[in-house]
Amino acid sequence: MKAVNYVALPIVRLVKRTTIKLGGWKGPVDFVVVKMDDFDVVLGMEFLLEHQVIPMPSAKYLAITESFPTVVQADIRQPNGFKMILVMQLNESPAQEEQPSVAILLGVLGKLGETVPKDTLYVLETCHDVMPNSWPKSLSMRRTIDHGIELLPEAKASAKNAYRIAPLELAKLWKPSKMLLNTGFSRPVQVSYGVYVLSLKKKDKNLQQCIDRRIQNKLTVRRKYPFSALTRLFDRPCRVKYFPKSDI
Image 1 (cartoon, rainbow, N blue to C red):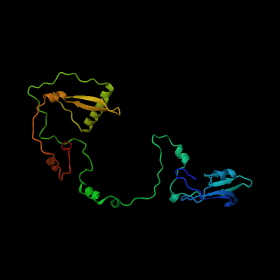
Image 2 (cartoon, rainbow, N blue to C red):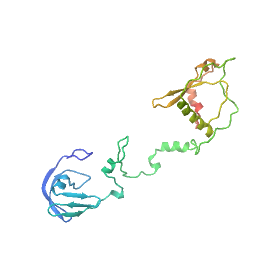
Image 3 (cartoon, rainbow, N blue to C red):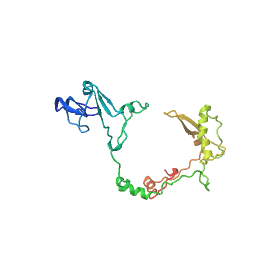
Image 4 (cartoon, one colour):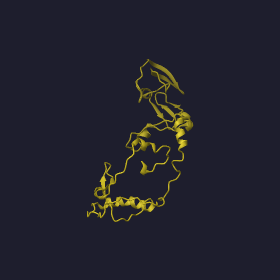
């Protein structure tokens, strides 16, 4: 014997024409004896067809329409008052990309401190001030030192036309730039020399901005500075909590 979404169970024995009583009705039924954990007795399609039984879940009764019509009152019980959903309701739900699944809550976990390891709790308590409660809504104050790129003497910008771009793609690029300007996260820059920006399509068909610095690298002064060993560089972040992008 095999139930839906369950392993096949061996049949222990077969009991024929056993008299059972349901409310005021009494009649013979054939039983197949198997080991089950979820149900005590299962009345299948053979019982419904033989005795012409019509189940009425909405009215909570069984209508037996054989030689002696009988109405048997049924009691539908739900575990601990949980709401249940029928298989027909799940099948008639709107189509989704992923296959639907059903989950049953069996219990509630205890406190967070009982499941999180002690080492993790120690790290969370030690670095509780790393993430601020609210992020600033504007840029920080202007620094006293303005960093720049040193160019070769008498360097001139190359006379090269700008890359062509479709009007729709240009509107997509302007939209995030205007949003950053309006929120205060960026400032307009007015310089006499700039670099070109390429718009490349990624696999998901979105645009990715790439900066073309090939010409600028030819005009940039290259200075050689001593580079520390990697072991010393890794020793610097010791006991440091905040890492700006320039340090990573």
